[in-house]
Each structure stands twice: as structure tokens, then as C-alpha cells.
Amino acid sequence: MKPHPPAKAPPLPSGAQNLNPPGIGFWALVKEDFVTHERDWFSQGFWAVFWHRFGNARMSHPRMIRLPMTLVYLVMRKLCQILGGIKLDYTVALGRRVKIEHFGGMVLGARSIGSDVIIRQNTTMGIRSLDDLNGKPVIEDGVSIGAGAVIVGHIVIGAHSVIGANCVVSRSVPPGSFVRSAPVEVRPLRSRPDLP
Image (tube, rainbow, N blue to C red):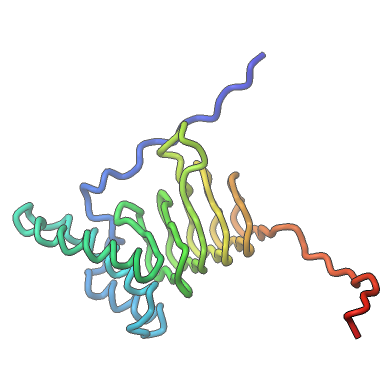
């Protein structure tokens, strides 16, 4: 008997709607993001989130107003990628108080990222296979993601979980879990003449 292939993910958001969190205005959201990033005007994480919010907010405007805003968004999104090393497209549903710690080497291609999530440098989120281009992860509220983590596929990282540094996660994680890579092993060196 052949195993059934895993169900393919549903379509990703098209980008035709404003996916900013409801119940809070654009500038109040930006202020909250600024505070989340420790009021640091030079935080690459803050600017990546700002242009993500801007990319979504423009979708609430009529087409004639949206066109120049789209040009600004496309240029600034690319500058965030070049100068900050952070790729965060506006089609990712992003919750409130998401903190992108440090910068560099980040491809945040999730289906959605919840509120109060912390993401550290060199994190990759995205598809696991070209067979399912919609298969991107869902990161629930309160998740803490360590440096160098790779989270791929049509999976859910449960609320308030911790993903340790350098973990590769390709299956769903229940809420409140701690995921770590193999523990570091420390052994004494064999006697070497160059060591005291």
C-alpha cells in the first residue's frame, strides 16, 4: 500500500488586502514597533517591519494613490534587503510587537507570524519543497526563534515555543515546546605538545 502524500498547503495571501493587524491605526502600529525595537532609529529590524507595514497600508488606498506608494515600497523593501539583510514581504501576515533582533541573513517567508515573536539573525522561513510552493510555516504568538534557525514547510510552530539556535524544523511543534539541536559535546584534547 502506497503512503498518501501530505496534503498541499492552501493558497498564500494574494497581497490584494491590507494584512496589518486590525483594531490599530498605521501610525499607532509604527509607534508600537518602534518601542518594541527599543526606540532605536538605526535598528534594521524596525525598518524592515516599518516597510512591511507600509506595504500593507497602501493596499487600503485607491489605485491611483497606491501606485506611487507601491514604487516607494518596492525601492525601500529592496534597500532593507541590501542594507539590513532582511527579506520580509508584505504578503506575510505579521502580528503586533514582532521584534527582529540584530540583522542579516534573514529570509522571513512565512505564511504568518504572530504577535510578540522574537526573531534572531540568520533565520530562514519558507518552503521545504518545490512540490508545494504554498507550504510555508505559521509562527504562532509568543514564539522565540534562535539565531540560525531554519523553519520550513507547511507546519505550525505552536504559541510560546522556543526554537533553539541553529535548529532545522520541518514538522509542526506543539504550543509551549522547546526545540534544540544536538547538545554540544565537550571533551578534553589528547595531549598536544603545543598546549600548556
